[in-house]
Amino acid sequence: MPVVGTRLDPVPRPAAGTALTDAETAEWVGLLAGAGPERDAAVDRLHAMLVRIARAEVARRGPRLRISGPELDDIAHQAAADALLAITGKIGQFRGESRFTTWAYKFVIFEVSAKCGRHFWRRPAVPLDAEDWDRLPGRFGFEPEQEAEWRDLLAALRRAVDTELTPRQRQCFVALVLNDVPLDALVIELSSSRNAIYKMVFDARRKLRAALTAAGHLGHDLPRRT
Amino acid sequence: MNSWSALDRFLRTDPRDVGCAEAMEMLHVYADLVAAGEPAEQRYPGLAAHLRACGPCREDFDGLLAAIHADRD
Image 1: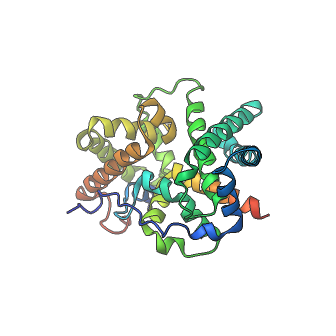
Image 2 (image 1 turned 90 degrees about the vertical axis):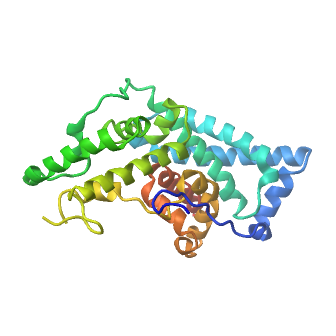
Image 3 (image 1 turned 30 degrees about the vertical axis):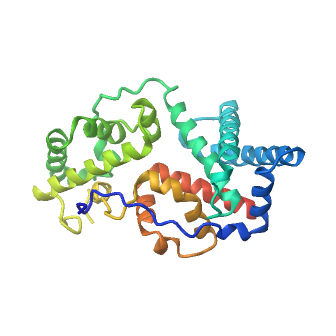
């Protein structure tokens, strides 16, 4: 029996084929699964669509990523090209659970994510093992007038990080929370997957909260009132 | 609300959370439901729980939804 708070349950899938009744979806699938000039034209049209979506997505993310100008366009074009390859290669796996365009856009959004994660490491090096605990009060909005109380909480959190987490969980917690490394960038640095890192941090969060709750710093259901 | 409620929220985990792999697998289905005004969160509570906790998956979802809406504008 799975332990509550540690399982990551699968999502039930809808019945396949629902969206194939959508005329636009049926047309895309028919053309891309076919051959000849009609397919080539559909691939060109899809590529143009993916470039448009990728450009909009990198522009949406750009200000937070401190990426601008030609770099944004490079990322958009690379993302569109890689997404096109993935989509045309997997068209036989499209189950019609959504509109075709939504399924296709998902590929290009994921490609933009991955490329932005790689871009992070082009900036001046962020030491993964540096531990700047002084950033935590600002990161979580601790108010200066309550410093006497949150200093105890911070010390307890630090102890729990040292004693409750595995070395890998600790490494991920430090990178993501103390060093502000984006999760997708950490995935690349550790040659891991988003799911594996998330699961690692999910388990770390659960352990840390349990330790802080046991020590009386956090409430069982609601944050402790002062 | 005290000064460390943000930390408390960050450390809380939802047992329904499906994780990134499942969320990414079904994100297009979920996004289509949301864009259509369907009760996606009720149909996929584990995916909704994940999107509340996972910044990168939430970012992807927001981007996907923006792409769908841009098509309709």
